[in-house]
Length: 306
Image (cartoon, rainbow, N blue to C red; front, side, top):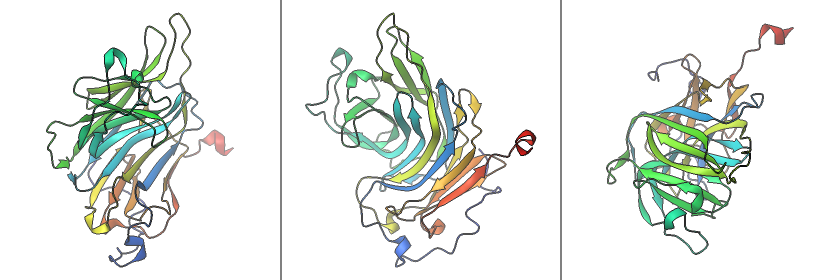
């Protein structure tokens, strides 16, 4: 990670910040979740199997629990279904419902009050047997955003008032178990949060090949109850270039997307020297149009220019 100084694009040309009475600064008529900005890396020419994925994220200021903010560090699709994971100011879990099957050894979903922490989710079957949950973590199987399973963990100090500023390394590692099931382990700063099964196998059968899709993305989201502009603290989040299978990705292009259903409470810049994408949230950094902004484009090789 580098300091805030750098050759960014996207902030310098923005207009002055609007006041609380300006339309762009008023909360959306539709409640959250609001994707303040999505950042897509186009890796459609990679065609790689999925062995590992990691990213370094810096939270530059403490983000208080008074706002429900999700810093999605990575997400995408695989040949075995979509996923995402990241950091939240308030990570919790509802009590189990009758349609949720118990996991291995009678493991069940339990109600957990929200606190700052991390999560990793996979869309597919709604089964707790597809979760490997360490004692300090917890899991949810839900159907309110499509059917999914999710592994979650609070950071030390469950009464912490904020998602603390700092550097976070979030990593996924795929593995095959003895029954040829495809699992993905999730760690944050080297500590295991838990594992999710992407495909159930059978012993003595060949496991399915596991490929990453055409894009890897990040986003910053407000979720939960409706939120007003004056309640959103200014904050800065830096995303380093993701590492896929141990190598930094070389995207065809990287672009930022702003959506009409979300309020314009974020701006994005790309530091070409550091290969970092920076997202600023809050009043001093408002953009004023919903648009797609190209942040980075791969340089063509000499052979491609011929």
